[in-house]
Image 1 (cartoon, rainbow, N blue to C red):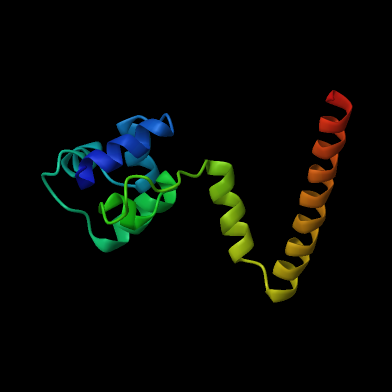
Image 2: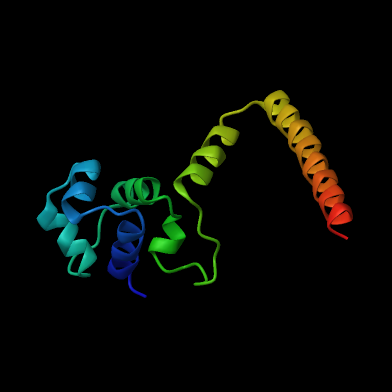
Length: 117
């Protein structure tokens, strides 16, 4: 797909109108329309803003990613952003908690499967 088509698809996945996205990016709706219709290309700063607002990578927008790439929900994108803001101690702590929670869920599933038999 083209750059413009990737913007439209990402915008629609989030349920944003063209006007909504233009306001979030602080550009005119006409300028956004030009990007979406592949009439003009945005500056690098605008591509960065687009990727942040649309919760996709700039590679995806530029069609440098395979189409089978994993799509993240806004909540997952926020979690990744929060993780990146942690220091090494916070990341280690999060990994410990995550491993504990994964073990708990696996144990719960195992118990449920045993009781189903």
